[in-house]
Amino acid sequence: MKEVFRIERVEDPEEKAKITSEVLLDLPDWFGIPESTKAYIDDSRRLPLWAAKKDKEVVGFITLAETSPETGELHCMGVKKAYHRKGIGTQLYLELEKYAKEKYKYLQVKTVEEGHYWEYDQTVAFYKSLGFSKLEVFPTLWDEANPCLIMIKAL
Image (cartoon, rainbow, N blue to C red; front, top):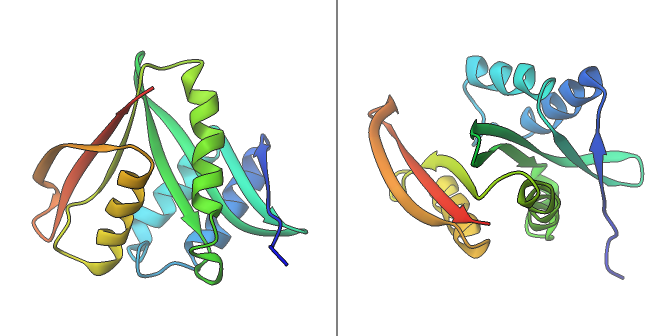
């Protein structure tokens, strides 16, 4: 029997922070820098956020930021490790995209350039599967060990 997940928009800032914290702390291979994780949690309070739930358990989330009047940014997304490869990230993204199409011409996402970490190679492949294309790499935006790849998608 296929598992059922529901996606819902969350409005309460403290609930958003709790959801973000719970999911990101389950993903140390992607979110292992405490300062960055704290920033994502803090940012989630003010950004549109969608949560994926199985029954009452939160299993993932996605947030949207604005980088210009024409461009939204997939700011942060996480799905608990035990729920990877079940389509939850795609479901979350599709809800975000539906909302973003009403406001923006483009979406962008920042991640680590391919060829540095297996986990992020998977992330880049996931974004490509959603229709994102590589735009540019900023080799030292974050630091030399983590070159920033910006990917874009026309809406």
